[in-house]
Length: 247
Image (cartoon, rainbow, N blue to C red; front, side):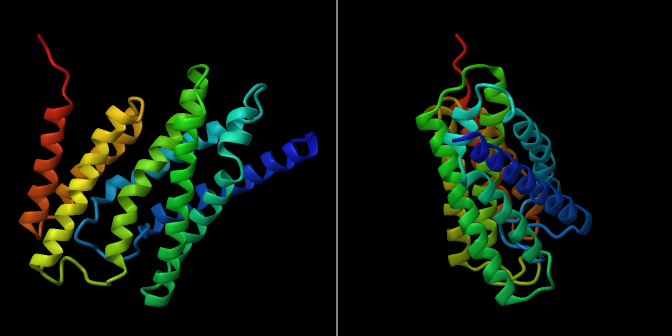
């Protein structure tokens, strides 16, 4: 990039970050997070959404780090324009879900979050396949926040899918089909943790987010013993599989 293009790129990143952090703060204050007011069959406990506060801090570090010499390869090429686009769409999605319970608005919000999930998945893939951290700063300010963001979007994507139905888990008992779908999703999330550890170059950050997410789901899903124990047992099972062998 020319210096003008580089300056514009960094300025847009700053604006996108402000929108992202502001929307997360607003959601925390109102208690209206992604998936809106619908308490789905895989909604995690409210404390799980504290991940956005962690990301606010880590991504602020990334915004500052982009001004350091020698970071253009990661911030401008590996992340590129997908990064600010994802943050802006995330802010829009959060604000849409904060509106009153409205199926048309929630449908638009869901489509928007699908776009966010796709962009974050591409960002994660670019870092894992086309880039290597050169120092601890690259890991802490670039790789770690994107890994955490990726893990969070995977969990909340499935939550938003169930939210489209509009059925509250506290008002409608899950049928056999719903329980099978929930179990398959939980199994997929559980398998993703293993994928992070063994096939994601030892990505502990993303694995930790999904692990915590499964525990948050197990804690929150008290109306369905099947969902509660499925999330809990699957998580414990993978902990056993991923534990290092001790002679």
